Length: 360
Image (cartoon, rainbow, N blue to C red):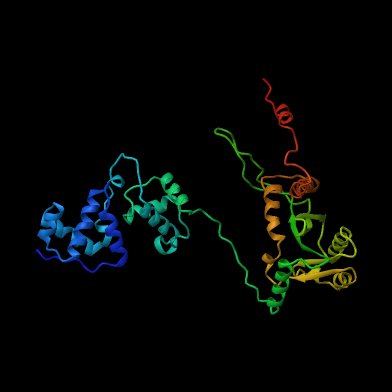
């Protein structure tokens, strides 16, 4: 019974034991680490007990716990166990919490996503922590740079001409052609007259803004034929009821009119059918317009797509327009601000307070 030996140490275990041995704020961990290191050095259990000032039975128990559970079996943090005390978590525990949060929830709990409550229950069940509040768990995850993110979709292109089209567009993005201008073109819509959810800032006790739940779609739709100028970082477009080849050709003529005739327009666009008509191709050849078609199912290659996200967020979300004219004014108002044609303020603060004052 006096010759219970420690199994061979892994490199990371040896480094961690030496760190634990030097701990002054946690005498328990320091003593356990000294027991394991001395046992690994070949010292007998009774001699180890004399060195660390404990009983030989406790030395054997610590060695057995380390052999069975590793470092987790001999480390102990009293501030994580004491009830009613403020919780403190070491960097190692915070890293383990982040590691669990980043693991597949399907493989660990059989559900498609974590929640803070389910993550806390799993951490307690696995004895990673004894107790932790939801707010502290949220704080630790934020400190470890673990945040909630929305999942995204991805389309794989099967275009046989993917490589030459992709390289042509990337080459155009990389360097501006001499005496040319790079423009990305796409349609935004269809735009219906319907309430759209969004976010708003409200104080305590204030009701969140409400939108109607039922509506009809008898007002038709509108489309925005939009263009994004890469040289000036400006977004603009036209509103149309339909987006056929005739409307798209009219939009290209309007776009051509905005720039000098001697300047070549390098237009990036997708393979939508109205873009591929013979009228569009022949007109582009005769008016210094060069078309760059993205491969099929690669809308992410068109840089105007990222501009539509902000347009939808700040001009459409959290709105309930009752006419297309009102909706168009809101979109144009955002484009004016986006293109730095006006400041962010539309109304003076004092005038707003005066108009919305509650009568006494």
